[in-house]
Amino acid sequence: GALVTLARLASEGQVGHERSVLAQAAGAAASPQLRNRATLGGNLVQRPRCWYFRDPLVHCWLKGGERCLAADGHTERHALASTGPCHIVHPSDPAHALVALDASVVVAGPRGQRTIPMADFLHMPRQEAWSETALALDELIVDVAIPPPASSARGAYVKAAERAVWDFALVSAAAQVAFQGPVVAAARLVLGGVAPVPWRASDAEEALVGRSLDDAAIARAAGAATVGLHPLSRNAYKLDLVRGVVAEALRRLR
Image (cartoon, rainbow, N blue to C red; front, side, top):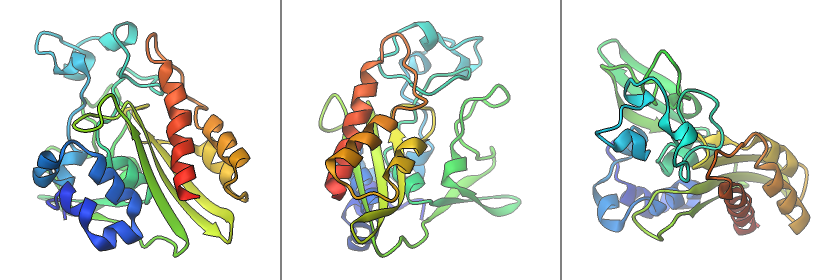
């Protein structure tokens, strides 16, 4: 349900065993006090932490202004993969794990319920909508549906932040990998902190399938995870973080 707390997701035994990437992501969010109050639904629809968007004196594109001030401003925490009118990153930790788990969001409104794949629930900034979600104005989240993972699947979530607690990710990686013996049969790698939406590292996924998680395969996947990412003026350091969090997540799975 949308009102389950992040603390419960992080500690629930069944979630931790079958969907460990979600439990780890929920446990990495905010602080213990906030996780006791924060809900999954609220976490998914939180607004971006961009300092231009949050400044009441700044009229940026996301607030109806003419341009994104981060395009040529202080971009240390902004996106590596955004060619549109806005360079925010989505602040949720669980959202990236839910994309890795191929989850869907159930929303309800006056016209009834509908189910939206998590990968489509959050969308890139676009000229016709100053919103980060697919929710209509008269809809809200009521449930999150996660299909049963493969019996051989394992997950890991790694987050790099300036502080160990109560901070948002500079870069994160949610990895969900299914094995056939020692060989990777399927992989989903989702990056946080690099785009306005959870970012599928498709080239890294392809680099893993059919291979065992030895050091060489992990290094190839970590390098491939930066394909399609292009830094702004002050956030090229995030490319190194991407390689680091992907490699660490895969080492944990191994």
